[in-house]
Amino acid sequence: MTAEEFLKDAQQDPKKGWTAKKMLIEFAKYHVEQALKEASKKASIIDESIGGGLNIEVKSINKDSILNAYSLENIK
Image 1 (cartoon, rainbow, N blue to C red):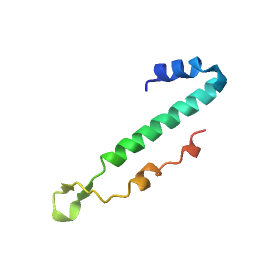
Image 2: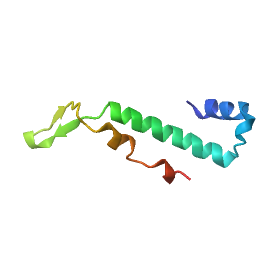
Image 3: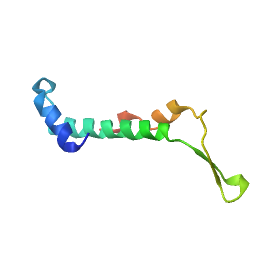
Image 4: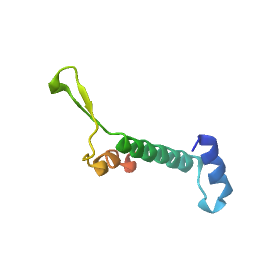
């Protein structure tokens, strides 16, 4: 969602009563969540020990460890 789309959505629901500050915080949280979700889908490991590096797709990465890597509580 773009900033413009997010702003329009927030303004169309006056019940939210969001201030400009709250809109910025929620927009930042939205993009952090989206970035972490995308990173968890595309995670891979590069094994440097083989020499030159070998990109190995690993399906056993704990995706929750990526999704929870950055606390949304840090966005204030």
